Image (cartoon, rainbow, N blue to C red):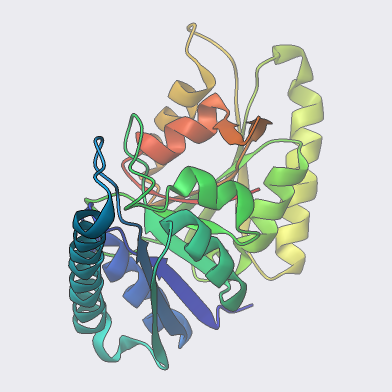
Length: 277
């Protein structure tokens, strides 16, 4: 169980230090290589001109993007330093999500920042909401406050779904390095308590066969709290540094709309989150 290649997606218009530090930390823990990825597309003005002036405007905009990409490469190499070998860089004038999704084939895990609330700039940022649903790789979303990947306690948010099973399998390399692993299920129906205990017993047994010792926790419904609030409370009670969860959503035309818990984990979390779809 290892990670051989970590890919970190950098944003043109958001802070990148936290995600770079976590990517470097991962590389150092696993002896992995790191690939930095960034892209940006020129944004035409609302009232676009034509002819020679338009061409000059496009060239100036693209030159500015190239300069910004060069700055990001320098930051990437300076921050990761000698913690990773090999160290690679990929950039292009392209829509960031499209370009990053294409490059994800070269990595075991994709590191990015958490999604800001509201609409992000598709010309400058590869939205983690797009990446998690389409990359085919586990996504590690890093809040801007992080300086390293805390694996002292890892909380696995279990749900009887294919997405949760995939997230658990994808997280095995990280769980193997954790000091404490807790698999918790948030009950929405108290009558399922016994069935929930049986499910978690199977999960704990599966992890044990992978030489990972874990404990189970059933969080019962109560006090009118939402699933997201209960999950936050469990993570805080455990002082979890990482939450592992399945990513849920559905397609609305060409846009992926995330479920409530997934949206919360990607936009309002205080800790790193590993998500798989």
